[in-house]
Amino acid sequence: MARVVVDVMLKPEILDPQGQAIARKLPQMGFEGVSAVRQGKRFELELDGPADEAALEQARKIADTLLANPVIETYEVHVL
Image 1 (cartoon, one colour):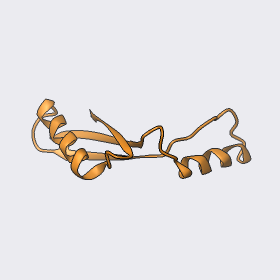
Image 2 (cartoon, one colour):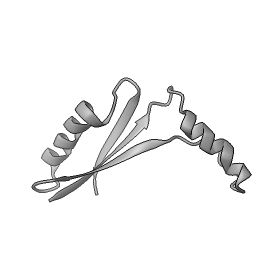
Image 3 (cartoon, rainbow, N blue to C red):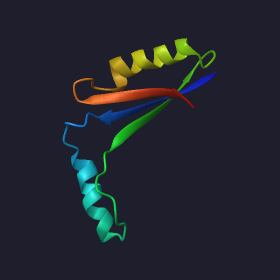
Image 4 (tube, one colour):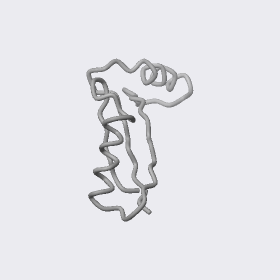
């Protein structure tokens, strides 16, 4: 069984209000030195078969069609 991770993030040019809210709150909580925060999503897929290039390609197709909005998001796929 292949375990594949798809990490989805907003594109850099897209405003991330949740990330900005977290960044503003950190100094109030005593965390200094964080200049920016970007919020994203992580999906873990369990696929039948080995963790090979075919499994990664299947995960990319899933990300393209369901997990990520290509207009505003990017994604990375890797084996867990």
